[in-house]
Length: 592
Image (cartoon, rainbow, N blue to C red; front, side):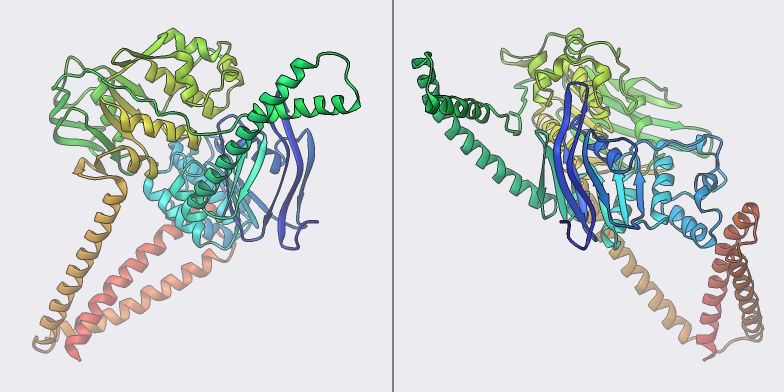
């Protein structure tokens, strides 16, 4: 019997596609107020489970029971919209409720979506994701289900969402590979492994510790089963003749033991380490490079940089500041407006792009890899076969012979990553490699990049990934402003926070000096007295206009066009009133 505060109860849930079992007899419950993270390997049914819970698909067996009256909000991994709809059209469910429209406008503004009349077809993938996110947040559902909510969000937006969900008093179930997000938001971790679900009552760090305890226990049990299995196997071989009742019972127990002794235990793969990669001393140089799209979108402004051997660089910055363009300039996929980029002759790029690689749906996974090469040369006479590489990135021997059309989105991204590594590059350029990859694959990739003896450039919004992989960061702030920070992402954030505090302190000191100077001035002149009188009248008029517009916004009688126009006017009036109030305070203090 589910507890009184249970908001969702799942019992005996099973789902398969053809002969492939995704999960079997899953049972779990979510209590009101819990924030639950769901973790599993790519292809084991995370998104399918969310589709079952939201009624988009039906289970083969089992029950999904919600508490009566529960409102569920669902963010799909790839939300789709009519490209001709405007942003406000995409929030069409809320047209009839002025309170929700005002809340939608507030959340969209916080998510940096300000033009509500912009067609959805003109938005980037990250902007569309933010509109979809706003759609579920403004409904304030009892249970919020999110499928990879941080995909395509830049770091600032990810941190905003992380803070919002951590503070919110709601019940949450989400799939995400963002480990800092899981650590800071979740109070429960559910893991699907070997068709079974495990529950851990803690955040991601707690889950890691307890999961390792579980695996260690399973290994010990499997070792004991293997020893007993060897003894029972000898007995089976010695007694092939007809057996009595006790012997038949022992024979049945033997097959049970055989299954336990050979059961797969999920564990981290061995680190895939290349011993040497040849690359010359000259890597690449940017010399006084300029790049812009039109006059108002500057990417690089007289930018110069010399890349060193074995350097591991991370690139961060808000969406639209030119991170991907920088990479395409380096690879020669786009041309500079002026300046020069000089790449060393020994450099062999391996490029993993956001767009990914298009595969033949009817090819097998192993064939796609062997088309590139039969093995990866690790140096020192060591080689890694195509099958071994796939296994390092968690493609089981059975999955290696699957056709592409059977693969999940995350498995396809893993396959694309393997095709890049299979070509033995000495300079890896990875543009958003973490999207859609499961945590186990991310760990394998992090290990690989840490040991990689060549050069690496990574563009990523995954803070945990960047912290583990890079040794310094290029920060793209927009309009050609690019700075080089000597450290990882967390160190950069700590430095930025310290700088902000110091700047705020300096501004406070400056204000104090200004106040002291103002207080020691002579009394107001005749002209300043008239200005003070006029300011009082202006402020009263502006505040009256603000109250009138706020009443109209809440009246429910405005058209969408009037609503948009008045919503844009309101902050302008407020800013003008604030400026006049500040000047009024200055003059009042002198007068006083």
